[in-house]
Image (cartoon, rainbow, N blue to C red; front, side, top):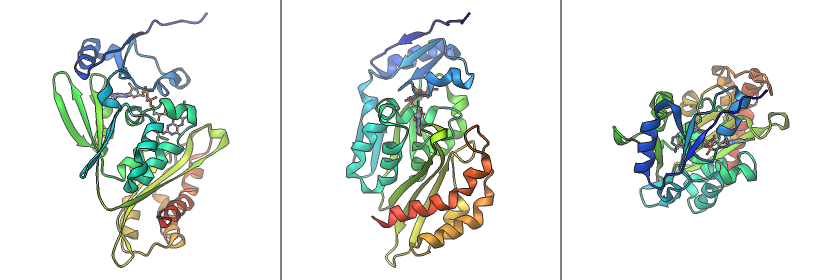
Length: 286
Ligand SMILES: Cc1cc2nc3c(=O)[nH]c(=O)nc-3n(C[C@H](O)[C@H](O)[C@H](O)COP(=O)(O)OP(=O)(O)OC[C@H]3O[C@@H](n4cnc5c(N)ncnc54)[C@H](O)[C@@H]3O)c2cc1C
């Protein structure tokens, strides 16, 4: 016989009210955004929370605001909305592709930016490596601690201890003269999840060479991370995709691919250099 657990759903209309409910629920509660990660908890053998606090009715969390210094993305913005709203921001072509190519059209209408950053253990998140390349910051709030900002890398490292009473509010991306691209390898047997992801952001120097390279790698290891040795090695090189692929091949052994039922770990590492090349080919079209 199946054990059906009762789950409460709260639908506050302000950030303050959400925080008050989360504080009262403590470890019994959690935020719900698009629900596309939460709904698969049983498949991961994870328990559902006893109560969820949805952010669907808080308008402030569903906006993308572009000004001269930053692009501010509400945590409740869906992948589909992000892909639409970033069309006018060439610097964020990589983030736009990360949002617009992820999963499938139905999931993109529901899944949110906040859910992508807050889903603990989600190695194949597309938006995370694209934002890591942009040196993004996040803004979060708790009832007792108030509002604060931190770098995305620090947030990802500490999020497991900050939840469940924290609410992620916004992601802030600084504007700069960079170009970016996103390449991913989906495999039919991996469902709609990519087996490896490469996100890149670079500046084009006046002499035509690569400056300030940022390379984010997702789905290869358990945690998404920047590939700093490759970033250093390719700074100053010409935009020559086969050459950059060679630099990536020379350094790919720095990764230990995560094992999974869909592909073995070595395969994720094996495809990385070709994905790096593809990302740079996309950049050259800018
Ligand atoms: C079959 C399938 C394939 C998919 N493939 C991909 C893919 O290839 N790439 C990709 O990027 N995504 C993919 N997704 C979507 C993925 O689930 C979402 O990108 C994301 O990880 C979850 O977003 P969500 O809004 O649904 O979050 P939810 O499921 O609502 O929440 C996820 C977690 O984040 C927490 N949370 C959410 N919002 C906040 C907040 N504002 N503050 C604090 N905590 C919060 C929740 O408590 C929960 O722990 C796929 C989904 C499905 C179902």
